[in-house]
Amino acid sequence: MWPAVEWILYPRSQHERPRGYGRDFEAAIRNRKDYVEGPLEDVLGGVDYVTKQFGIPKSRLALAGFSYGGILTAYAASNVHAFRAAMSMEGVVDFYSRALLEYGGPNQRAADANMGYGNPYDIGERARLLSQSPLSSIDGLQTPVLLECGESSLGPTDCLKFFRTGNSRGSAPVELAIYPRTGHRILEPALRLDSAKRQVEWLRKWIPTSPLDTEDEDCQWLQ
Image 1 (cartoon, one colour):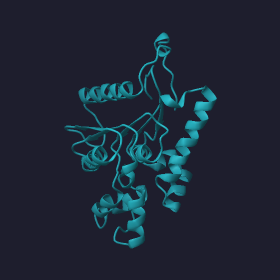
Image 2 (cartoon, helix red, strand yellow):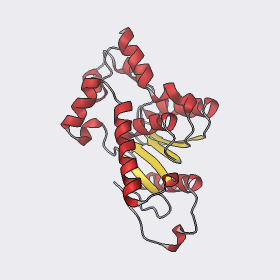
Image 3 (cartoon, rainbow, N blue to C red):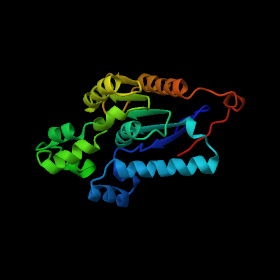
Image 4 (tube, rainbow, N blue to C red):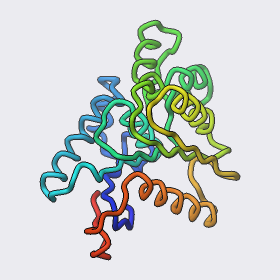
């Protein structure tokens, strides 16, 4: 959760994979092999509910996600226009390349269990992996995206792809921060502080403070 006065965040997936939402949720995704479209509909349904329930202006919404949530965030940035800003941390954006990397390796079973990559050499599986990858729809990018990843994780390759392709083909800016001495999670206090400040600045840049916001110092939280 964010101690934010000036914007409302609808965080998605602070867990590392779909199972963070329960076995039924994980099984439904795996059985359908739908890792982005269905879950994104779930996110948008939640957004619609909280904006109506609490009278929140949709013009002041941002989306953030880590790991699996980073995947959904990157996908949402190019496929829906419901958010003023997005922050994707450690998310895979090229499913096909990641499947090729994992296939036949020691992590293949875990990769299949977590993200259902399957056999990337199968024509049908290849088409599915390409179509669901956030990178495939980046031409539709209209939401500013902040990317964060650790230099020692598998994230930088995907982050660099999204950063370069988004800035050259999308209609919104993409900013990238790669943290040194960092794996899948930021552990060093100084780097965590830098990440927090960077994210606050990103939200303030794209969701400016209104006069009404400055009158109330209380934080408003949504989960």
